Length: 396
Ligand code: ADP
Ligand code: MG
Image 1 (tube, protein in one colour):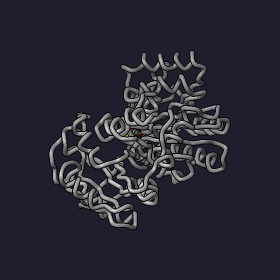
Image 2 (image 1 turned 45 degrees about the horizontal axis):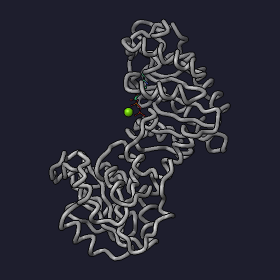
Image 3 (image 1 turned 135 degrees about the vertical axis):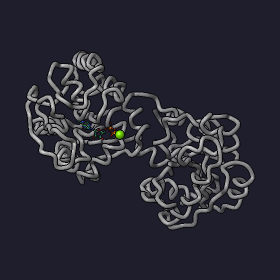
């Protein structure tokens, strides 16, 4: 897919309507993690330097088409101003008179944030009339919210059909990284998929085995695969009803020449509790009252070798219950191996997923990865091979 970027836009004096993701964590009315605000800065700065009037639109939480004061974007404006080092005005509504007046007051280089788009039912309904009301305050549309691109809403999709549409800098970064990882990767390309459930990642596994040269399965979902192959999993988390599906994925991998890596050894404990006595076991050595909570050392070592023999890695889902030490060990070691390979330029390593990102930070190696996506749902849908409506609408 090809997109227009801001380098191709005539910005001077124009009103740029920019869809950003400011759905940030808040505590006591204050922004507690400003990662998403910082992610929007390159686009905002580029627009300001080009002499555009910057009109930011965003959603916050799920007000379901009504005004919910607790879900106002008002506290975000001063937080953004701090990160940006410039004044950020705020308009009490994203359409109608308040928006019109606030945008009219902007001089080139000025920035305004409009109130939560989801206060209006037309946003999630992708109502063309609502999209036109939003478009009234822009000469061009910039989508910088990859993380909202799996939704076909007025501000993420509809606007791209009304105004000249551009990919923002963060959107471009994300799409480039994803394309390097799965669209057009350097081969061999390897995947690691972990996490708890096979059932929540079925589409993802089915898509990946057709695209990757190697796929390692870990975490709770590996238990289901082991069970499907006739191994005892004791008291482990396991979706026994998914056994046939697991076998189907193993067959699909074979048909597509995707080498599957299932655990060789595992770490078990009787209790899922911090510091619980952990034992390394071979497959089939799990007692009835034991749970598989992490990948074993041989498994991690083999993953490391497979990564070292790959050019590209895409990772979603931890290899064990990383929130509860010592069951973080497999995930932490594998993450550090991947991080070191990426840092030394031997591997393009891309990771995403809420818990995966938390696990990489826990391992202290998120910075070493080539790219870490904070997009959550959009990242997963993209890994499933789905077309993201917000991205498709930007394509020329
Ligand atoms: P992401 O958010 O990155 O997509 P998931 O939500 O799919 O990842 O999976 C993360 C969860 O999987 C974590 O809470 C982790 O504790 C759990 N998990 C990993 N391994 C196991 C296991 N062996 N048994 C039970 N849960 C596990
Ligand atoms: Mg999760």
